[in-house]
Amino acid sequence: MNVLVVGSVALDTLETPSGKREEMLGGSATYFSVSCSNFAPVRLVGVVGEDFPPAHLKLLRGKGVDTAGLEVRPGKTFRWGGSYLSDLNQAQTHFTELNVFETFQPRLPEGWEESDCVFLANIDPVLQLQVLGQMKRPKLVAGDTMNLWIKTKPDRVKEAIERMDLLFINDAEARQLTGEKNLPQAAHRLLFMGPRFVVIKKGEHGAVLFSRKETFCAPALPITKVVDPTGAGDTFAGGCVGYIARRGCFAPAVLRRAVIYGSVMASFAVEDFSLNRLRRVGKADIVARYQRFKKLTCF
Amino acid sequence: MNVLVVGSVALDTLETPSGKREEMLGGSATYFSVSCSNFAPVRLVGVVGEDFPPAHLKLLRGKGVDTAGLEVRPGKTFRWGGSYLSDLNQAQTHFTELNVFETFQPRLPEGWEESDCVFLANIDPVLQLQVLGQMKRPKLVAGDTMNLWIKTKPDRVKEAIERMDLLFINDAEARQLTGEKNLPQAAHRLLFMGPRFVVIKKGEHGAVLFSRKETFCAPALPITKVVDPTGAGDTFAGGCVGYIARRGCFAPAVLRRAVIYGSVMASFAVEDFSLNRLRRVGKADIVARYQRFKKLTCF
Image (cartoon, rainbow over all chains, first blue to last red; front, top):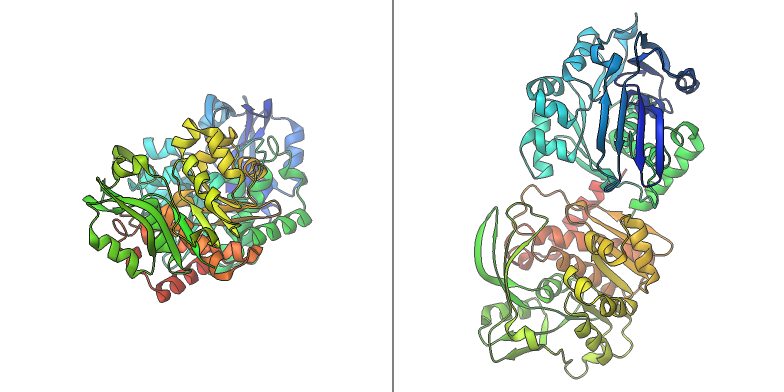
């Protein structure tokens, strides 16, 4: 099955304990696409400005990502600046320049409305709903959200979540959205809102998959040097949705392995700035790291 | 193999979101002993005052714990008061009355110096060292510590850790003691201090076992209603050390299963106040919950 993703494509400027970098390739749809492309064909819907470096476009296309849905509009590309100096699990935002992203109206290229799977990255839930409105019976609707939208548009967030089969959300956001401190309870409330599967992302503590019948805990790979955690969550979702799309079914065993493949991809993403490590990942790397997860958890 | 434990036996007064309780049975050695007693013979070294309720002593003996090393001294039993109102992962201490514990000098009953395994619960590292000084070649020295001793007696803490084969420590304490934020790095520094195995306890996020060659991640059981998290860490250590003692060896596979049995026991402990749930746990409960951990992690 193929995967359509809608989200941000950005230029990131940031500082981590490993150094400073300016205007690197970033954005939720970017991380998702490159990660997902290792498992299934990816179609990217997003917007960039006329200043978007051709090399970045080449990178995406080199990974087989179909960029026919990536509009180039007059103006500048979305830019984000931040740092992770005191805590690698928590970004401090320094600036957000929406630029062409401010008036972004996602439009699917012809034929893309029949995509098999769709991933709604953490953009405005109104735009997430617009994308779903353009699609014909996708087999899997997956999506993410973030604290900003939960705070400013909680009803729209819930409306979008109601239409998802698979929700990715981090632990703080799950608590924020449900008002429930206990994580398993929060997950069950989220399942009650519509999704068949909820994956709670816990950063260095891994991820937990909840369905009405099952719970599956996956650790994060212990990494001695996290260089740049930006995009780890989208990379995780990319591996997870990509694996489900490749297998073409939602059996419990497939979902469990999908969460591990998501964790595998995220473990690569944080090892270098931007997509510098992720872009170089090949099938053998993925298989080897999947085996490390086996050793990490078997008893 | 048998297990000697030295630590506190206390009367706890506390409040959690589930209610308030006064003067319940508590203490690190208590939780450890009752948990460990499901796997191996336990010998308890500690002190209580003349006010210690006979029913509590009966509970310990009923679980097969040898209390010949539990001194009864003139005065009152150690008391601790606290709450977990804002965060179930973090106790707020309201009062600490050391009472007879203030002048506690652990003395091993005759013959106990030849115990096979010893667990040094989180008492003053000077007392931990005194106990080790009285022992003859234990096959396993395991121990715990806490933020108070790391802050006030860091050199003594390191001296005690140097003599441990297996260190239990929580994530915040591991960072505090090593000055290293990255958890796998902190664990490797702890291994360098002496222990062959370091188990980092992460509360609701589970535990990670590190040796020089291996890493093993165990989740915590997702529990929808944590009633009282007091003693969860000591209960965890009790299951872990108890299983190792029962198996009588330190093979990697045994250590991994030991961490799971520790997690199993801790999952019972938090389901009710004090030892109310833990004391009623039988072999069948343990086996059933071990199977739940299998299902929770297998892929």
